Length: 263
Image (cartoon, rainbow, N blue to C red; front, side, top):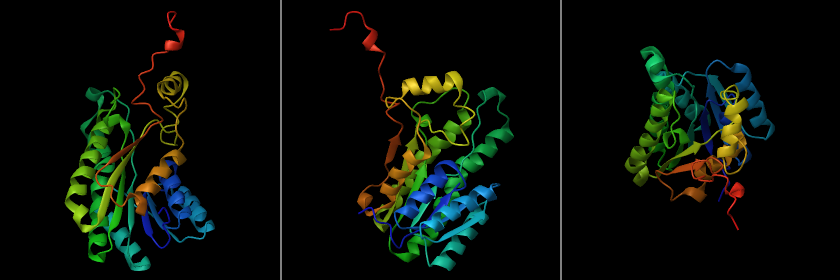
């Protein structure tokens, strides 16, 4: 049920972090994987080499996901070279930690152009290729637990990820009857090249204490649930958001081990 042999996948933001881990995990499950990224040709090449070392095909290019035409052109290239697309993972994102009133309009627009509109462009490109194939398909959007537990000073990021969840659910309803499964994965605190500078010192200690698992996630921790959603095991899963956060958002522990009256 988890075999992706013969499937053709596209992963955005595939040069590093979650995107690279997802691309490699899909390849290990049997899929050929195309990846796009912007401004990290070396990382894309590294991901491609890993995919090819597993014995799967790879196809990569530097593409700005905020550019609707460029995303569609890459999707068409994958279709022309591989015959179609079965799986599309929207993952490419950027980050901005800044108080709301200090965030400029251009910064706000730039973040949403990538983190929300980029997902819209990816969904549109995937659907325009999957629907005529009449063989179904999978779209998986990488969201974030910040839409459940929003931190201060990240309003633009939280807004974009909340939009990703809404987009996922709306499109899932619209296209489920046509065999397209559209779902999302919401990671918690994941150590990636994008976040490694943020998760240091007291910030890291707080996140580790709040997470029931007692540690921050690795990109590989997120890749497994994506493979599940891409597989036949998830064929009846539509419009769901799988939280992969080590038990952070459910953790209500307040260190009762130190309660002097406990028995």
